[in-house]
Image 1: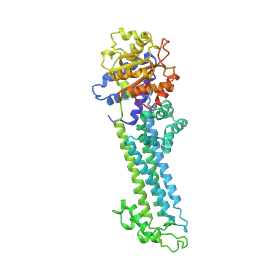
Image 2 (image 1 turned 45 degrees about the vertical axis):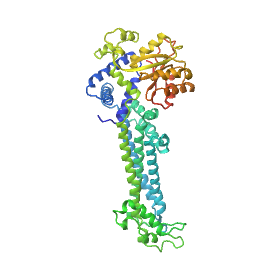
Image 3 (image 1 turned 60 degrees about the vertical axis):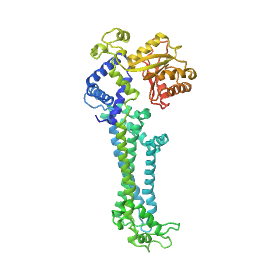
Image 4 (image 1 turned 120 degrees about the horizontal axis):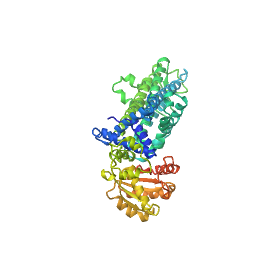
Length: 525
């Protein structure tokens, strides 16, 4: 099954919708639904990627059947693709018009002042070559994993302006247009506009290449416009090109430089078109005291084929190759997209590890109340315990001075019910790294797949606590996930944290700034 960027956006959207569920009824419906999807496609979905895409296809069908019978509502992936197509056309049009206008204006010839070919080459050829070389250097540094070059790309003025226009300004303009198709998709439109800003760390490679392609389209359109404007000006006007210099530059040196520049096309283009001859270069040199009356017309017009070929071979064609590189790189990133990220892995585990037996009646399951939910898990024969299904093992870290044994049991039950991890051990810690380091290093190296740090959500993630989290993550084996599970005050009867809790939002932002994708914030349900 072919993976597209819009599919990943929609997958993220539906998972985010599931993460926002709070009521026991909705959660139970979610569990039954995911288990049903798994049983329908497990024989055909051989990989985790295919399993997730099958789940996505089911969710799309469900979305349009329940919420959009007329097919008017757009999913975030479709909105992204639509906006992106519009932006590509806008970049191509803007770049072309800009290139034509600048070249046409620069080539304005008044009869007594020939166009300085040196300045034209610097502006429309040499400057483009320098930008292309800089781009190639930074792409190479990005490919070998140089963090500084990645930051340069993402923080560059052009990248920032286009990203802001695409993900912020354009959605706001569309909202104000009041078009019916977007009016019915305001929530998904808002999700699309926030996606790159909120999850730039997680999806930066996915969104980098579309923006890179967009800028390359603008650049190639600009150069193509400049080429078209130059050629059109030559056709409809009587142009005169010349060169001059205060320095003692001989015609021989200029000829050698021009011949070198013309190497890419001189082997198949006739010599009289490839570049001006030595005599024509000498005849087009402008000396102020002599004026241009002494210069021959055939010498003054001999430069235009060289200029046009220079724009084509040094600006248009290289930019075209950069677009091809961007398209291939985007396909590579999509093909190697990491579906073992925490949120995707958790969905797969949820599908493969039922709490409810998949034959359980969905209607009956949705009526399970919050009070008897835990009792049903233990007593109802239609439920399977987490230990009956081989799955992910977790090490629990928490303060036993804060959480009593009874509350710890409740937390473990919640983890096994909603995160689908087998809690191997609950380890008491003091949140002092010097005291906890040895035992955490030892236990995290054992047969566990995840480490879960339990903390009360109302306590702010101050700098010392965040530093402690980074330190214990460094003790863990590479690639092992650290979950920060947030609960309400341990003295409350209900430890569940609402999705709209302001403290939960503060924690997410603080952990996000740690820039470690293996540290995940999760609320207790």
